Length: 99
Image (cartoon, rainbow, N blue to C red):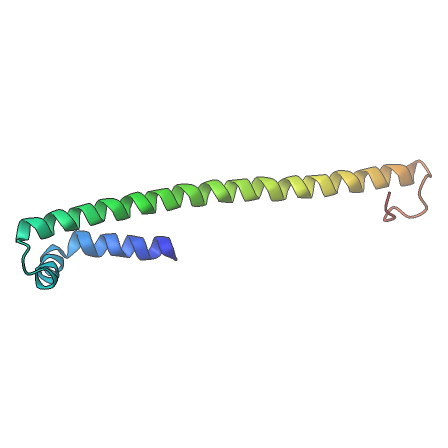
């Protein structure tokens, strides 16, 4: 949700320059157009950095969680294989018994 909001914010700041600068001048009457333009550009830069950081961290944590979950699934699979092997050797009556 944060990334969607930030991307829309960047699009508005970048594409609606006149409206953003006009609103800036209304909020800050002592500023001229140059100060509003500089403020708009720095805001876009900061928002772009946050979006990029959020995307990189999102991808990283998705990969970490994916590896962790697949590791848990692999561990459960190996335990199941061990139970089946013991059952084949006759050490367990039911292959679904716990070791």
